[in-house]
Image 1 (spheres, rainbow, N blue to C red):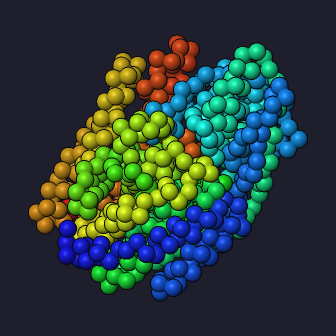
Image 2 (tube, rainbow, N blue to C red):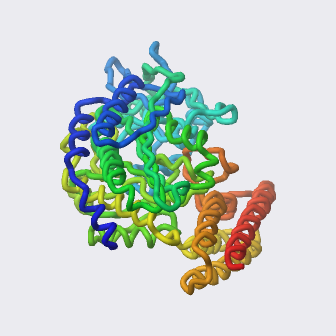
Length: 572
C-alpha cells in the first residue's frame, strides 16, 4: 500500500456514516415521496461536509406495493406483493395448484429459476411454489397460463421484492414482458398450510394494493475531479431507496458512499483521475430504474471516459467477517483481491456478477466489481438456521421489516468503507489501469471448452476457439510490452478501456449495446450458451439451434478479432 493510499484510508471515521445509518433506521424509504426526502437528508450532510452535489430529477416508471393478503377456507393470511404485481384490490379467485420447487443453497444460485412450468396443470389457476417472487419464475408461470402466483418464502417473514423481468423503465420493446398476473409472497408456515389446501383442490383469493406510474425522483451525484486526467473517472454507486427502513440493504451502503465522498473530496488533490459517486432511487420499485436512467442519460460519457464501475450494496453488516461470493469480472479479480488483502489482511473469493444489483452498465461495456461485499461464514449461517438471501451480509432480515439498526455493525462498516476506498484510490492513481484481460480470455476459453464438450459433433466451435487463442497471444505480447515500457501509458489505457467495451458485452449480454438485457440469468458467452442445451432438441428442432449457434459464433469471432486489433494497435 502506498503512502498516499494509507494516508487517505486513515481519514475514514465512523461519525458521519453511522449518523446516517441511525437516521435511516427510523425512516422507511420505498414510497416515492419518502425517497426524495431521504435524498434531502443525504445532500444536507454532504453540504455540511463541504462536498458539492448535483441532484438530477428524472421521471421514473415505478410500481409501489402497499399490502396484500391471501384468503382460503375462511382464513386470511398476510402477504407482501412484489413490485409490478398487478393491482387487484377486489381480489383474484381461482383454484390453487402446487408446483414444487427448491430453495437456493447459496447466493450463486439465488436468481436461478428452480421450477418447470406445466401448462396442462396450471393454466387458469393460481400457482403456489417455494422460493422468492423473482422474475424468471413469475414469467414462466405467466407464460404457462397461470392467473396468479403465491411465492412461499423460506422463513418466518415474507420478503418484499420485484417480479418484473424488465430492467429499469420499460421502452416499447420491453412492454410485452410487463407482468399481467397477480403475485404475492407469504411466509413459510402460512405457505405450508396453503400447500396442503392446494392438494385438496381448494380455491384461494389474492388481494393486492399497488400504485404504478411515473414519479419524479431525486438522484444525487458527487463529482470529484482528478488532477491529471479529470475526464476519466472511477464510478461508484448504490441505491438509497429500500424496503421499509432497510438498514443492511442499503443504509449501510448509502453511509459508505457518503463517507467516500467526504474523504475523497478532502483528498481531491491526491487523485489523478476523477471519481463519480451516485445514489440511486427506483432500485426496489423500478428494477434499477435510477441506475438505468443514468446509464441511458450519460451513456456516451460512460462509454468514452469511465474506467470501471463499482457497486456498493449491503456493506457493514453484523457477522460479515469474510469476503466471499464477491462479484467481480475476471479482468478485475486479481486487482480487487490484492486491495482487499492489503486493507484487511483477508483472502477473498468471488463470482461472476449476477444479472442483478445495479449492474445497469454491462451493455455499455464497463469493467465491474462488487455488488455485495462482506458476508458471514457459511458455518455461522448454518448454525443460525439461515437460508440464502441477496444482501445484508447474509442476515435473513434482508427485504423484511427486521432489517433494522441491529443488522449494522459500526466496526465492520468502517473496514468495508476502507476496502471500497482502497479500490477507488488505487484505481484512480494507477499509471496503467490494473486490469488483466488475459484472465478474461482464459475464462472465455474455458467457457467455450464446456460448450464444445456439451455440443459434441453437433456443432463445431473451432472458429471461436481460434479467435480466442489469437486474442490470448496478442494479450500476452501486450502485457509483456507494458512491463518492458514498450507501450505508452495513454495507448495502454485506451486499449484496456476499449477491450471492456468489446468483451464485457460479448460475455454478459444478448442485447445490442446501449440496450438493457432482462433481469434474468445470463450465462457466459450467452450467444453460444445453447450449445450446452442441445440434448433437449429433437431431430426436427436441432437445425434451429444450430442456426442460432452459427449466428452466435459469428458475433463472438467478430468481437475477438476486434479486440485483437485493438491490442495490436496499441503495440504499434
